[in-house]
Length: 215
Image (cartoon, helix red, strand yellow):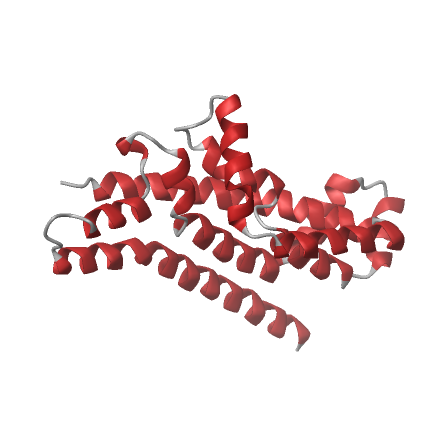
């Protein structure tokens, strides 16, 4: 029998760590880009847009060789390593565009009061980017949760497989048990739906608070 419960736990671990690291690194990178001089900023935005055009399949072999040299094959580090760089340049750009809409005078006032870059990011920029943070959280979690190729490519031990690999194994059994497969698919997509509904309710609550404060 395929251990779907264990694989769900593996997927939850990878997705939670990957999404959490993505929120930190993407928001840091977006905040740093927004504070840079216009000339450097334009070059970095152009680079980020170019990276969006690079297909994921183009880096599978270099990534595998790199992780093999570091003896990280069959570890979850190989799956969440992209989060160190914001997972996708799209997430960095989402934060960048959000922080660019924030008045620069707000950060200048904070710096005059003695706030450094870390304090300005944590106490000013990040709270103002709450809607972007919720959107990136859902997208990043969904990205790691639904990833099939990376677990199949980098994981060797069956005990480490994620739920996407487990569903594929369930489909390829000698006699596919369709009711069981559909039930497993329903269970597999449930966490993403629950996360979306939860974050949507949080966002609506924040919007209600803002509307009340403006009355």
